[in-house]
Image (cartoon, rainbow over all chains, first blue to last red; front, side):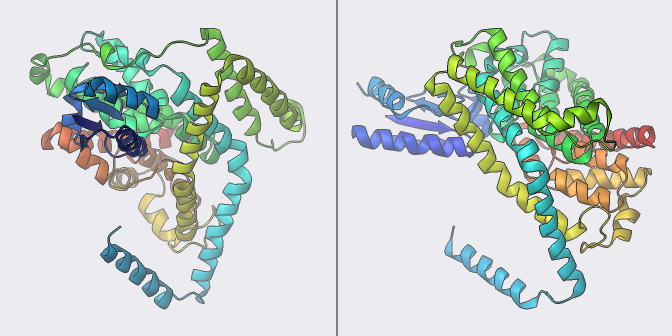
Length: 80
Length: 391
């Protein structure tokens, strides 16, 4: 599974990264986690508000830091 | 942090402690001045202005549907509408630098195009709600209004010029509707509930910030006398609204984003206040490290040079959110003219070296250079016009 965290490096993006790593660890799922900071690459995913979370090239959320339960749900959706 | 960096910082602190002539009278005076200025902010501005303003910013970040604004930036959006919305939406969208650059890139690459994107980029930092409130409170409402108006007008002008210069390129650009790119949150409250909630928040700020009038009589003075009762009554109303209309999740996210703003901005603002006090002293004190004559010679009066110097300096300097206010307060107190002050306000927060580098990565060298030059020219011009009106 491929996970991308989109954001120019602000506080919310770091918070999202932490939540994602916690969610992956709690579920015991292995994934490539990549942080995308280049604005042009962020725009390729059509995300206007950061932070954004992309799992397997699908945008799951943008503009807010989701709760860990939501992140777990998305991970499980993509993992099955 | 790398170990080398730690060592460098430690060495710098050591060298400063070793060599700064703390017993020199001017150094002594300016250090005292720095803390006196900090005290003035703590006594005059924190409770009366900053804390209510943070709550308003937190509310804006949470409860105003950003998707409804972004709709007007899409490729199909009406041009006039796109420019107008771009130039004023900074009040709502630009409270966090996290949102400005992605939105700018999105509007430029996928939405309404270069002109509106530039208008948004330029006006955003100047008209975000915190900046306007603090500018009006500390530097006087005239400068606050001039800053907001100037930013909106020149945002549109600069956007139109950029769009005109790159007309050909713009015609061939693919544009998509941006609406689907933003999550639309469900509405929990009716329009009038939202409206009255924001109205109460703003009234609290207005009454808390109510200054003592010079004469001890008349309408303004009677309001001043009862202002804390008004604030108390409004707080009760606000408490009722928050209790009845908001669920737990709303309340938590409102308080936590308010706290986030305070955390991000207050330490830097206080560092800015200390620096301003140290370098320039409080207004009229002439106790700062930089002698008043230098400041007067450089940016005093309302000449073309003074305005140009102020706008170029503003463009290159990096101001953390809101720190431009105490720095300008110090400069104004040391003889800076009103015109150059506005020029610095208009060029400063929108541009800085680190910011230019990011813009460059999106726009390329040539467009970035044109943008910067336009901002500097516009800021100089508006400074001269404003200085002329005030004088």
